[in-house]
Length: 251
Image (tube, rainbow, N blue to C red; front, side, top):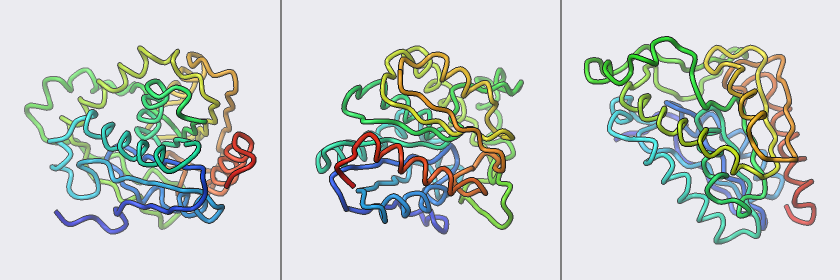
């Protein structure tokens, strides 16, 4: 299956500190590669996997589940763990959900996590219909390219595959059930105006994680895909400072 432009996975092998970057639901590595290049140029070993079903055509997503996406995230994490002294995990939107699940499962093996507009639930009224509608309709209109900065493209589908969307709710349920297992240092970026993920997601996460080192940065000039938006330089620089603070002798 041909990949969409820019949907290729990214990897760079540099220092002894690793960073795993995870893209969002229906998105692709394209939304994360500028951030990945920035961290690689700062001397870190970086991985941006293409999650199964993403970066090709939306129909491919409907034959994958959250367990498939998590398995690929975990595979990349283990690869970094094998070659690095410490590993950080960072995610956008659903990538943030996967980041939280990895943090719950891996405990001290993760040095810190960075979340950008993470999702653990939805307030959309049509969410209640997903268990039935997914059998009747393949997809709903998409939620891609919620970006304030002109001429940006995250390489996402223009439709929401409904079987995959219903599976995502299963991931959210587990993340919420085990949220107190998240103890790692946490840095969260939240866009003040986000047309995809409601602000209640970030508020719930901060209120329920067990991390004693937790910081929220509100982005005033970006929409949902903030990693490609006007505040991207803030995300890049502050995530680098976060890593440097927690691994000061490496990178």
